[in-house]
Image (cartoon, rainbow, N blue to C red; front, side):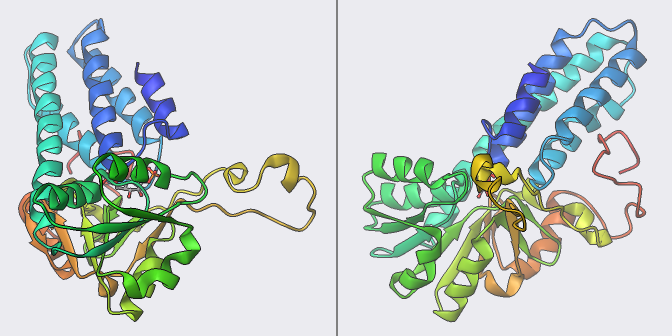
Length: 323
Ligand code: RUB
């Protein structure tokens, strides 16, 4: 189950920052109950190994290390035996999953208030949180329509149009490069996030920053829907969020790329939209301007400037270290 989930996340059978986080926590919970450890230290060591395996799957979505940090940190408490540790771990995992699901619902409620009756929206990729805002606006009876991009190379736009179609929302499906062409018809861009840095920059599916530039030029608002656990505490320390570069075969079939001698395919999966191009970030704790990202990291995630020293909080940190 653990290796299977890790593989599915790598292959993107499980994808989207929120789903990745919940799948990782579920896999850890199942792993914990399947273990037959010799002792408490043995149990803790095996759980650390499991956390490290999941952390290594995809590097960009900060929801993954944040979720793992949240559940693994309960194992820092002193326990008398394995059963006690396992019980506390199971409870923490379930609490995380419930909170995460409720966060998406709450984001939908808050985000939908920023969608007006008659609005034309544009969304990119397939974000549960962004779709929650759009679906809730529809549920409230607002008449909306949506431009949904294709999302090369993995075509996550197909998932998005299916959901929009099922909800009865009039949708125009466009190629990614048509976003600027249609931007003057759009009132609000709604996207999700894989990570939000302390300075309010948003990491999301490749192409989001181009769409944000086009929106900025057309004076179209851009709203990001992101659970608080997508905010990246370690960016306080100046740590950059790693952008995943995926297999070139996703962009150009191998037999075709074999025909070229001087062509190299680059396939970054995400890009960074600076805070200046983001009007609003909707979290389950409320809607904030991107410049207030630090407050989420400090007040909700509980990280202070200077809380950890550089180097201590590497991405391999499983939550059992000092930060
Ligand atoms: C998914 C993507 C989504 C965010 C937010 O990329 O960029 O916009 O993860 O999604 P990929 P959600 O398909 O490469 O995982 O709101 O569902 O967490």
